[in-house]
Length: 290
Image 1 (spheres, rainbow, N blue to C red):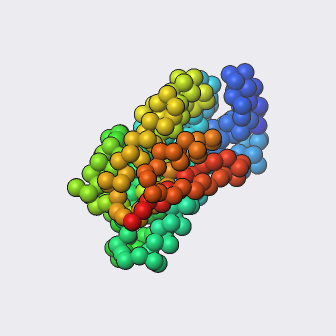
Image 2: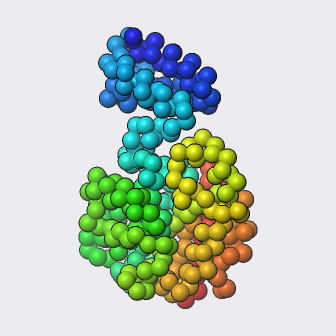
Image 3: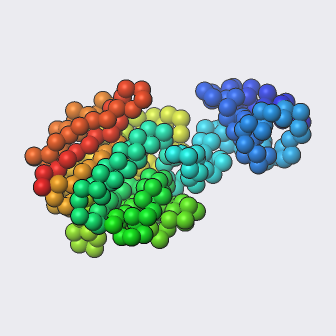
């Protein structure tokens, strides 16, 4: 079978299974199986399919709803290739906004404050944000002007984060901790000046519905309780006891959650919301009092 014929057959099969992106899925899976990128696949429709059995297996997984990122084993995110599997959430494009805001916040603090600055990513998952921050601030981390901590309550997710940090050559620049939120802060670990967190913010009902990849990703990283705010609430209730004075907390939130999150912040804190390219509330920025 040729590449072109395989794309056509796979597209029909995936469309019948309910995939909303059947053609793209077929092209990405073919690229994965052939070891080339998608542009090569599109440019060589006459080439022979080298491993029909591997392609059929990948296609079967996708037809049952398994995410492309889990089948391929990686996700392209922030111009990085992040290893992905069922131990952690697949990095989303929306989370790039959180990473960008964290970079700007850390950079500003390093020019204004007395180093070292302590930045802590809570619920690191695959470690994508920690990798991006470590690469961006590698010189500052090397000179100890910045300390970067990444934690997760899931040991399995933390293992995946460690693998991604090692793949990108920044494992020595990030302190990993298996912890519930900021529990070790002020005790085993320092109080952070900047907190970055993509916590579970979906309502239990939405997770139960299992739409798209949600049925395959770890529930622990998705389920925010009946109102989607349970874990965010837990963090914000404890934050004043765990952070440095005047700390900044950056939280990825769901569309429409801005007012509810603002109502949860500690007394004296200020809140602003950053919208994504679709105009939806995406990152809550909480400035705590000194």
